Amino acid sequence: MVWVLCELALRPQYQNEICDEIKCLSEDGSTNMTNESLKRAVVTDSFIREVMRTKGDTFSTVRMAVKDVQLGKYIIPKGLFTLLFRKKTLILFNTGYTVHPNAALAHNNPSEVGENADEFDGRRWLEKGKPAAMTGISHLAFGLGRWACPGRFFAVAGKPSTLYFRSKLC
Image (tube, rainbow, N blue to C red; front, side, top):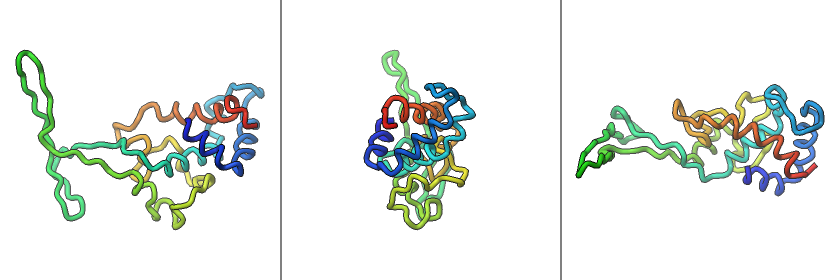
């Protein structure tokens, strides 16, 4: 949330458009927004996704191979957890390998983002069907697969109304 507000403060060209969208979608002019109105906040959602894409320090997805996996010219061997009891204490340790994908590389993949991946475009995700809360190999901000952050929808849903009503930018 803080990073989204910082980026919005640095990019005044998006402020009026986002504020107007949220004003238009709020049910009665108050801070009450329904789930349906949040789904229609497409400009705000696109801006949030672009902030998360360009933030650059997302290393939240960590996986252990459950079978041998070829990654390029390398083989990632399957991992095992080993349990030991020592002096009535259970010790769990990993005897395999974990994989930590670099989200910055995935988030700048030209086949997903386009040729201008190094530029911030808050409208990049409009009409693309890729909301900020979605997960996938090209958007790792909330993790991946069945281990993806279950609170990602709340995290994104809380931002549009907060951008307008708490920051008083509008």
